Structure formats: C-alpha cells, structure tokens
Image 1 (tube, rainbow, N blue to C red):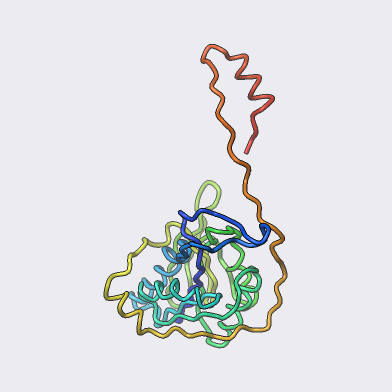
Image 2 (cartoon, rainbow, N blue to C red; image 1 turned 60 degrees about the vertical axis):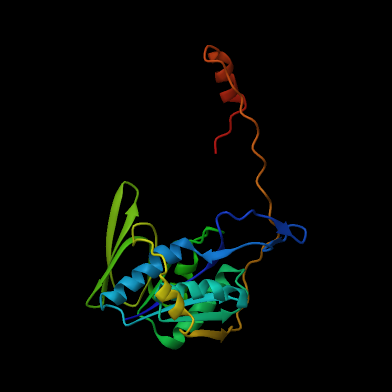
Amino acid sequence: MKILVCICPVPDTTTKVAFADNNTHFSTAGVTFIINPYDEWYALVRALEFKEAGIATDVHMVTVGKADAEPVIRKALALGGDEAIRIDAESGDTFTVAAQIAEYAKTVGYDMVLCGKESIDYNNGSVGAMIAELLDMNYIGFAAKLDVASGVATVVREIEGGEETDTCALPLVVSCQKGMSEARIPNMRGIMAARTKPLKVVASAAISAVSSIVAYEMPPAKSGVKMISADNMDELVSLLHNEAKVI
C-alpha cells in the first residue's frame, strides 16, 4: 500500500500576526514555519505506523510551496517518511493546492491519501475533500481512528453525541484529527537520515486559482472588564441585556 501524506507549512503558534501591502498580504518577516500539527501528529504518524506494521510499503509526503517550504518537509522526512515532494507553486488558493496535489498523485497511483482535518492558519478544512473529488476517490473526513485490512479501511469519526464507524474500500482519502495517533519527536538518527533522503521538486501544473484574498483585518481589541458588586443584581441584569454580546 502506497500512502501520500499532505504537509502544510503553517506559522508557529507563537507568531505575532502582522500584515503588509495595505493589509493584502500576511507578513512572513521573522515568522517560523512548522508542519501543520494535524498533518504531522495524526496523518503522518498514522501513515508511519502503517509502514511499521507492514501494512504500507511507501510513505510519501507532498507540499505545495516555494523553496522556503523545504525545511518544513525535511522535518517530515526526519520523522520517518520515505520521500518528500515539493510542488513548485504558490500555496495561497485552497483549490490550487488540492489540484496540484491531485495532479501529482495521478502520476504515481496512491492507495491512500492522508491529510489533517484542517490547517491551523486558515482552518477551512476543505483540501482533503477537494483532492478526493479530483482523484475520483472516496473521502471520509474528521477521522479519529483508522485501520486497514485486506484492502478495506475502517474509520471511526466523532459525531454529535457519539461515534460513527465507516468501512470503505481503497483507494481512499482521509482527513485526520485528534485521537488518530500520538505525536512523535524526530530523533537524531532520523534528522541525520533526512539529509540524504530524496526531496523531489516537481513543476506546477497549469491550474488557475478560483479565489483570492482581498484584505486581512485584525479582530477588534478586547475592551476592559466591568466589575459589578455582588449585591447589585439590577445593574448586572441591565448590562447583560444591553451591552453583553453573544459570541
């Protein structure tokens, strides 16, 4: 079984957000990029567990981006992946990312494509479903558990008030969330081995973006807290009716 894991570089969670060019671009000055946690902790680690169990033969990782994305996917190699692929294209539009990955995946023929349920920067969670549609593969989203036996995947998803168990024949695209696996830390051997593992750079396909970012806007600054005396219930009720906002 060949598995392709989608890797998305995202800003470190400690990043101080700033915008440039009249708030039309996210400023990357001084920003450290990491592997999207949902891609790393759940999708990639589960793929590696399949290989360690003898279920998967190859675990490849793909990212869409320019040369500055290579350190991030090198870290994915350090965790134990076999091969990394960087599709040489800008990664701004979600459809473009999905379409570029799908075009590459068609040339190899993967049995399973894994990705995180969403990226922690834009949180749209749509890439996995788009890839499945473009590859004409089945898709199961927001999976918390995943097992494969005899060419059939068993997937457990969290739903309102419980869990749902699905079975589906391969090939399959799955987006992964918490519960899929436990996070790993690259060891020194893996870090050293990653330097010699192949990192393939693939030319981008001719795909037009379907959306663009017009502008960014910071949320309004938080206002001060009003302290109400415990014996002044009437004022509290009045403020809750007239000033409190439901978020």
